[in-house]
Length: 149
Image (cartoon, rainbow, N blue to C red; front, side, top):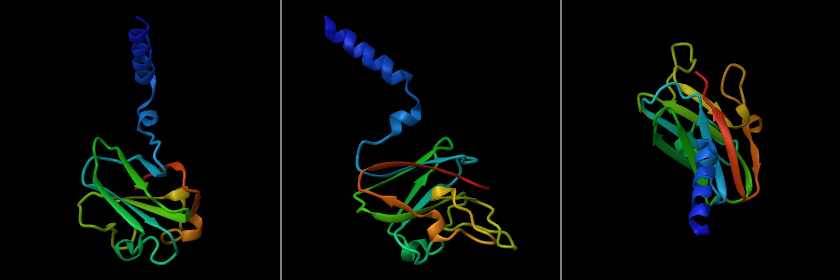
């Protein structure tokens, strides 16, 4: 008789949690929630770098891991698992036209969304690796990156 009550209590507790709380992963890795995506068009591309080399532009040549996913209801999440301990930086773009790059206007200003770990910002260009870097100790690390347009 107590089993149904426990199940009901567990269900009510789970229902009261926010979607973000339910999305958290117990698996070791770097888990990134991307916020402020302006629409559900295209993909969100997450690139994890372990050094300054190529950061953040040369994604395919220099990134340690890259994830590309379709945007669903203006939400996205990147889960990098089986990552060794170390220092990393993340670059995220909203590739609305799915051409594999961050599109810019004639002045070089991005016309698609972008974001970096630590909410790093650059002056007259992308931020440096040191501005975006973070330490990863091998346990589960939850991060949030906000897109900028």
